[in-house]
Each structure stands twice: as structure tokens, then as C-alpha cells.
Length: 239
Image 1 (tube, rainbow, N blue to C red):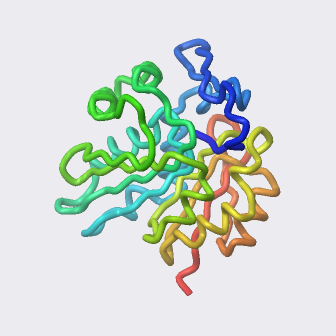
Image 2 (cartoon, one colour):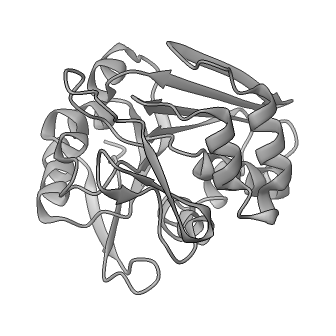
């Protein structure tokens, strides 16, 4: 779910499990998602913040980029809503950038908390590699494709060419992992956003908002999830 100094990788993938099988990163001293309900948080922040499913009501491929794959929860909830609402003939390509991909058993354990995504969890974990490295490409089902790019986020984004229609900015909290919200990374996200494309994030720290605006996005504050005061979303202007 987050980027980190590649020279300081000791114990970075170590997890604790808190109540209700909530994964907790020891390295970043943070939970992987909202403690009240991570699936509903995904809908409120990432789907609503990107004006989805409305914006994927079109033909062709809709491309979502994500910083921080984590447990795959955002993928699975997006995929669930895609199956319910996408037009016939459209396709979804979900690309996530993750330095420390989780093991299959940990993904399965975390996602088992939500019966609503049992189908997606089963298909994802069935196809997830034993040792995810490099560029993981998975055909989840007809019309739905997952790419997980393993490595540091900035280096990985600098190698990408094709822009995305929507971004989920879901690194660990800015106070615990500021590199994931740096000016350089936000500039790379902007470069890889199609004109009229959007981003959304639970984060509302002032420096995150300023970095997104400086990169070129119009930035909007909205009420956060589960009592959190604010979240951010916005758009790359068409011209």
C-alpha cells in the first residue's frame, strides 16, 4: 500500500493483525484502511471521488491507476461495482504500483472480512503469484485486467506511458510516509492522467493539497469518510 526507502527494507512487509483481522503495517505504524469499514471507505473516497461508476459508462477501456495495492480491497470493490454497472463491451484495466506486495494468504485473510466481495477475493487469490515481482499481469475475467507494478512508485511511474482515467492515491498516511505524497510523485501522477481525468484520496494534509495543485490539478475538498473532516479529489483540466 505504500512506498518506502528501498535501502531500508528491514521488516517492511511484516504485519500485525488487529481486531477483525485488520492488517497493520509495523514499518509504517498504520492500518491498511479505515478501521470502521474499508470497503465502504473505498466507495466513498475512491469511487465517489472519481465520479464512478458514472464516468465509466462508455465504450472502450477505462483505466484506473492506484498508488498502493495493499490487500487489493480497492480493486475488489471497484471490480464488484464494475460488474454491476459497466456497459456491455467496455473493459476495465486496473493498474497498481506497490513496493511490497503482500502474500496470497495475507490478501485472502484480509479480504475475507467482506462477504460482499467473496467472488472477487476468490478469483484474485487464485491467480495471485506465489512470489509477485516485476510487472504482474493478471486477466481476472473477460474484460477485467489487473497489473501490479512492483517497485518504488516514482521509478515505476516514470516508466509508464499511457495515461489513466482515474487515480486512487492510497499510500499510508502522509505523516508516516511523506515520500508517497511528494511533489515529484504528484507531478508524475498528473503526467499520467488523461485530460478530464480525476484523482481521489482520503488524505487532506495541506502539503498534499499544495503538491497536487502545483502539479496542475484542480483540487476540491470534500467531507471524509466515517467522521473524517476532509478528503481531496480533483481533475486534470481538459485544456
